Length: 245
Image (cartoon, rainbow, N blue to C red; front, side, top):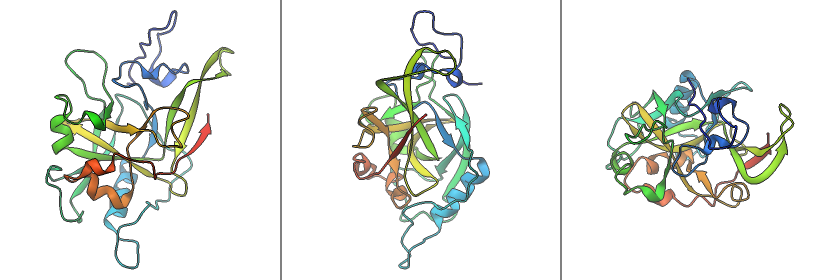
């Protein structure tokens, strides 16, 4: 069941995150951003893992993009959804020399940590918050990845007219990495739950939102899953295409 929307807007409520068109999917989070992405099936996630394990360059280096053949539609993922997550079988505080076969598995996890102080889930984690008590253990020892086809973000100020209600609503955008059907996003895991890691927005994302998911290139997966992961905080070199939706 998708999480209920509880945005503090007058006369606004009684629907789920999935149904919301008012940009209120930011409610109940620490930083209020990405709360909807299009992911993969369990079988497709296993294919993505196989791609990560298979060098594509002539010199045997890891591929810079995943080349899965996917249908036009994908799997919508919202907070509290269970979705396949790429989980290492090793402690990410130590890492491994290389991502060999069998070191990664696709496991169904719920999107969002459930803290003791609120009924809402917290589904975004600032990479700058790695040393805070809520995130410290997961960020150090249990980093993971989700395979994402595209993600949605709502503009802070731009509006459009809802086709459903005729009322002004915040404009939503879909973001994807050009030239590849799947992007990887850095996450952290706690038991059967995961949270998406975010960082400062790059030039393609900043006009819509000051934060962005921490996108990891396939050839950076071992870096994200090892002790030197802070080197990936700067995502200014990642290209993003956007489309109004």
